[in-house]
Length: 563
Image 1: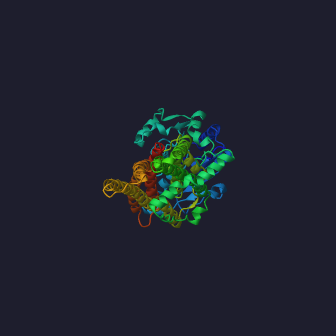
Image 2: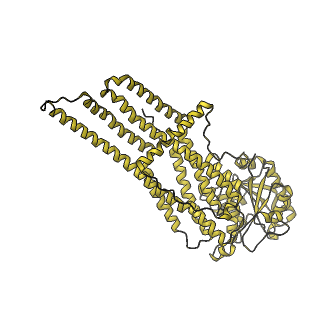
């Protein structure tokens, strides 16, 4: 089943700009028919519900039966008319008075809200600069910035519906330059709209929703399932045990602010929460498996060194030592090959990337913004496709964004993006610092113990003849055994640092903490919705960049083979 497409609408409300409304209505019918012909079965029209073009669009949309209409109104005192009960059931009402009190334009905030979720913009526009902030040309400008294609009905040329292509505009575009190109009808920026061109833009929206979780292949057969359960209870707990023994008692997880009841009751928020929790659970498990694999392989290094050198102490143990080393080697190879063949490190990176993008999308949704414009939307990136599909399914938050809701929802979003993340990185920074320090300290201790053993053996070997003593055979064997195990400790320590990067992660957490604290300090004492949104965008931009880099790193992460 295809996803629900989000269509934004903007248009003139003055009769002199619209010219002949009958002609505009006919052009809008052709536009909606074009969308249907492109394969859209169900969609939501998001509109400001103003007089003029908005009313015509709602009329055409409702008659076509494509889906509901969602109204975004700029002032708390406004309500949809009684003649639009379906619109009254799905609406978002902004606190325009509070926005004006900060010297900002409520209509521009409204226009941004319309574009945030849009897959496509329908615009009735004369191609001229708006008379005021939040006008029709601002909708086109914001759509270009967010890479949203626009179906353009020009009241002066209503016979042809044109398609404005956002990818034809450079990142540093001047909107005045764009206006000149539009007036000249220059391709590739503007072309006549066709079914094929519209379908090409809506392809990600028309495909079935991708899975919200990067699922691991389920083992087939009872034997494979039994082995999987055994690994879950033993090998895949290696990192947990290592972290507990070396890192010490874990700190309690930092408390997270629960979502306000009014937010938790929103259907869209529930959709995003369910998707995030599922992706997070998968990512957490894959992380434990990947890290445990590294600890297991490092442990095999040490055990193989001990078993292989044991005949120097117990000469009759040679065949058992050989068989033991063979078994350890095969086990290590099996674990390594399993991880490489299944792409476990890559899948962990993808699953964590999905979970983090959904976390960002969930927090941004509460403030009516999308992460798309802050991180770009690559339709070929599976993680971004998943996050975008979930956001599309969630739709827009509804209800009245009065002072109480803005304060409650904004505080929760800031907790998710800033406060909880600061606490998380502070805690994990300390943990990774302890793991790095204690691992190297243990390695150093083993080295000096080995030096003491060598010095003691050399002293004993020199003094024994003078004292009329003879050192037992096993003493020399134990020294040789220690000489084999000690370098293995060093190699295992280096391998763990290379694959799990404790020291680098500790420094990375410190950098992230400082950046997030700086963003949190930018919030005023009583933020408005737009001030919450501004900090949210900056946090999303920073954290999404970190997640993209981290995901790319995991795909090239070294996997210990223990051999």
